[in-house]
Image 1 (spheres, rainbow, N blue to C red):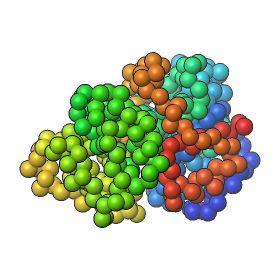
Image 2 (image 1 turned 90 degrees about the vertical axis):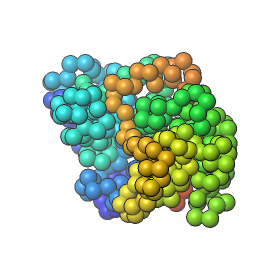
Image 3 (image 1 turned 180 degrees about the horizontal axis):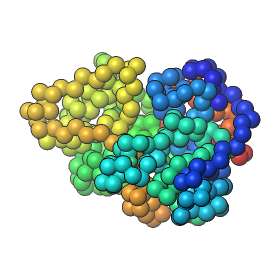
Image 4 (image 1 turned 135 degrees about the vertical axis):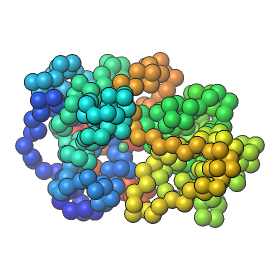
Length: 345
Ligand SMILES: [Zn+2]
Ligand SMILES: [Zn+2]
């Protein structure tokens, strides 16, 4: 729990949460550490009120269910998208729970999963069963970066075999996107400033790696256009910064698609998008905001078959006692790969 933005979080005893009538309480077995947790801790997220418990990428066991929950029982292995939908607004009715108008987000709109127990709302709409063969550690990463990357590449990006896909920023979501795009038969250009991140990207299927630190102002677009014979078909800003957003748009070929995946907090300033190029090249600009629980099936099937290996993204596991330090470190060095916290250990 942290009581002030940017100050050390501490482990505290608090009352166990109780489920709302439509909600559940989950015993947290694993929870991922994500750059959005760092943004929240820094005070970049207006939805947070203090004191606060972060954590939104979780997997665990249903501990208690509300009276109106029909589909889940104590003991079920579950995970959840980081956007929990209301199930009844117009967006939900259209099947677009990822942009629900009354969404809740554990670790943002209410206390999250850097804890032994977390309350989740509208369980029948939002919970996803975790099969026995999938570990909690692996499942924890699915709800935020992996599902977000999957939707960004496959649904929003409409990747096709043989296309060039540029991924700007190879942290957790970027490496997930590299792996997913490569599994879909695309040729991937991975872009990052960290040699270790590029090394991992190559392991996960990137054809080409571009070290952004070698380019003045981080403008990698010309290098990517050169490597791809005229520009990427699909490009993702997986970091979320004015520099990577601009480079992503400028790295596209004619009729290319840019998907914004990394969050762009106001504190970083507004990105400058070259709308003249968007017109002249007929570029597409889309956002990708998580993935609805009902859309998990095809991704889970690819994970189950081994075509996608989110387990390989987890590079360290730490106890809750080490979470505060790891959270603070996220700002200076987002790090390559994914850190997972095990609150029960
Ligand atoms: Zn996240
Ligand atoms: Zn809704």
